[in-house]
Length: 201
Image 1 (cartoon, rainbow, N blue to C red):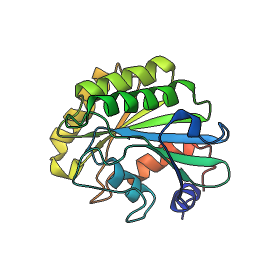
Image 2 (image 1 turned 120 degrees about the horizontal axis):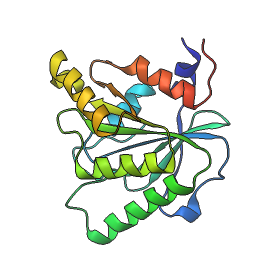
Image 3 (image 1 turned 180 degrees about the vertical axis):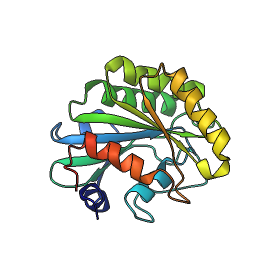
Image 4 (image 1 turned 45 degrees about the vertical axis):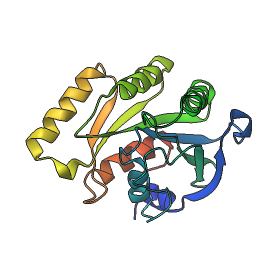
């Protein structure tokens, strides 16, 4: 088993943060995962960490309402950001989420990179583009993961990767992923290993 896989499999829930004042000390290395509601974000985290219910999955969009922190070891953390873009959420809560996400992404020194999850069948929605542009403007490393790739054939997957890469100016890295089949897990592990400064092996 690779070192990064060992570390990811150690993921343990630490805390849920509803306000920036509750954030843990800004030290060590963090990788955040963000995506539209129902983009497959929780399924991606569970597959990556090889756990069935580490991140809660739900058929109800907007389930993740806080920043959820998972410790990987003493120095490294994975952070699950609230799902965005769900119309049925009230305006006040939506503004609160946006402020919480934006404040975290803007000021967090421990943050090494952002994994942005998009459903491969519906990428580049308005909220997706806004978040990607915000992250890139801040100079944050951005890796876009196109989930549910098992729903499309190889040709359409390749075309969607090209389209997303071009839309983001070729600055972000882009890959396909399927939590169901495991497609793309190793590629994502390599990105995580680089950001979390995990030695190969």
